[in-house]
Image (cartoon, rainbow, N blue to C red; front, side, top):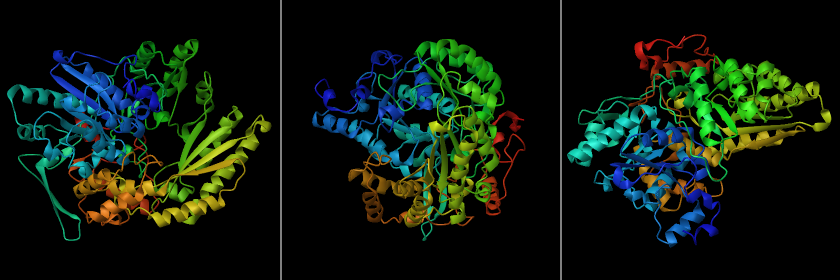
Length: 607
């Protein structure tokens, strides 16, 4: 390692020993858990969920959890040349030495990294080849709401909040080891635990046209695996300190989580539907957790994290108290995920007291009609008012996020993106106190990907050709001064769409693509679209069947036996309303009857 590290980029990714990392003696624990993030260190170390579960597991007597991230290609080549297996950062022990190997599934284009990490760590890639209880491979996270494409590789999936289900898994595993169960016995019993999906306990049959006929549970496994949730975030485990990286990471700051869920109900948003119901932390809990993390980590910035930060009811009180603590210590307070319709002068002044950063708003669509289709519930006037407030306050850098390829989209909707950018530029000229400074408006347009467990799960994704035509059209019209236009690679979005709504037959294509060298598929410099398309073709699968096919409303989906709390009937109703461009009020104003509150005690709405 000493000879290798000088030859690779960012060697601090691979050495461990950071402040706050936890080391234990292997002989003093009876379960070793490898928490794997299938991307590079600086991405994995920015993920709040991984930090929480790392602390939770290490807080248990007899369990040692270590971190494992995917090595970049230069480090992987050096490791293979030197016969060094992928290892845990805390001990340096090979992945094959761990009892449970857990992956967090944040992004479909990281799936080949899972296979690569297993193989590099000396662990058989296919679940059927891991016949013993040791090296049990588990997974959870957003992509677990359609786990089927990974069923060939993962032994069991945890559906829902990891804090709620993780210790059930480790308790059952330790019991299995003590009592000498076989892997098969363990998996049968694991399938009985609410929130655990064991794919080997389900048989899938198909119609001649390739659609699913039915999914049949075996050995008493439940017909529906409903997610588990933390019901009270105030009493939920939260670490008092974080591992402090020894190198720059994507989000290098402390974080506290305001709430889980989102009241808005945007129809394109998977997180907005799968994280329901809305559960909040009290200001007292948040202040205590924030102070503990800051004291124990030395961070100089803290972020109040959520899907929609400005929807926290007591945000004003919380930020005031937080700033009383942060300002004297020169700690900056970050409020991401602010909505334009909740932005105000008071909030702006608080945010900029320590450090003024750029502002980001997400109109998502260029026209009111299309915003109503996707249930964004954002008026153009709200956006311009927010920009006016910011420009008067001295801001001169605004980012605007849009999507192209949304259901029912036309060129008029794309023209609306240009129109909004022009109006924001004019708003700056009308409200800035310093025209000589100039303004920078960055408009980014990603390609829409229909996701499982959302109202748009029935919709066809635009084909690659259509997405490229729309990108070219936007490039041709986005000529406004002071506006920079960025777009997302359409090929990666198409592959994401193929896998996102895939079934377990895709496992062969994922395996073949990995064998042919596909990895880090979310990174433009390594992504090879042609290899992926050839892998699907060689496995007799048509990517268009998964991505660009409009589905009938009565089709059985590969993920229908995985429950996210939101009823399929509600998603269907929201799809129908989208065709009428009829918005739904957010659930702070009126309960939409999605069904997620049934997961709480008594099933009552939070309001």
